[in-house]
Length: 66
Image 1 (cartoon, rainbow, N blue to C red):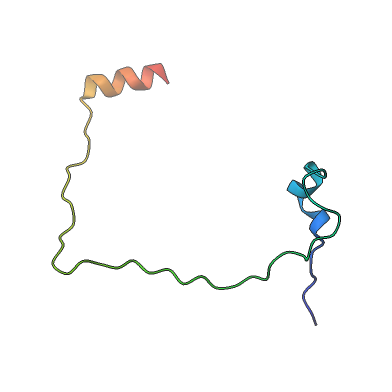
Image 2 (image 1 turned 90 degrees about the horizontal axis):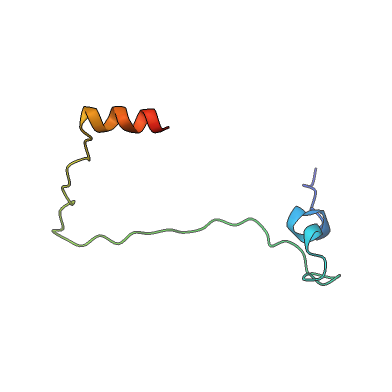
């Protein structure tokens, strides 16, 4: 069983802008894995920031506005 390869013109964005996309395209690129790495700095500590708290009166006023 082989997976079906979608046609480029079946994609919604391509159908909306036919003048931008040529009639013949090589196709949709294959699905592939992406390697993602976040490099950490040795000895760095997380930023400590207190969460924002709203006064009860301000919270009530905001809820009334919404």
